[in-house]
Length: 260
Image 1: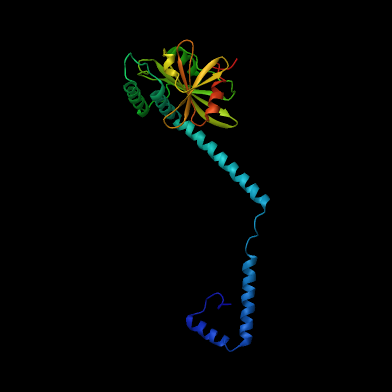
Image 2: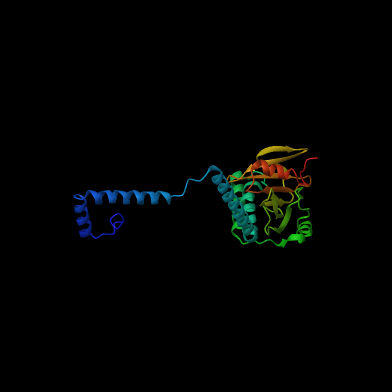
């Protein structure tokens, strides 16, 4: 009915409303029309979703979200890993690396390392070597074998040498992609030669078999794990996506530190 749909002109509506005040039959007809319209509108409302349907929908949406997140991580690894690795290394360098000369003030030494780390972090530093060429390159340049992980899905992405070293020490960065339970993430290992082990004992000591590593807090709130081998080589393991317990567990599964 045009009246119920508010389709009448003002003059027509006023005339009809005046007529309804005098005609009981038309009022009854209007009430029936109004009831019919209300019934039709209620029938068009979708029934409430069942709990089972909602649970299935939530699982489906979670699955789509995980797929999208994995795709984003793959794109991130493809395009941003080298730069991200160097930024992470620079942040770590600022906190943990450097040899203090006798009588040198700690604040001065830290400032020097921070400035060097900042210079390294802002420069575009792509990986110098990738894939299968990484192992021989690291052995030749850094005189060390890249740490090996027991995880079958651990893959070496590449490496590069820090041109200026760290506080006069030769240094390089090795980048890995490790896949745990279907979730790939970046692991960076900073290697510095001929370090003073005392400079790498900052943080909480953790025993892994017969070896000791140290968990260190980064300025951005993440954690790193440091280790110095018997030849005076310092290693710093960094994986911002992991919890500190996961990172310590992963370091414990390397041929460098692995429990025996």
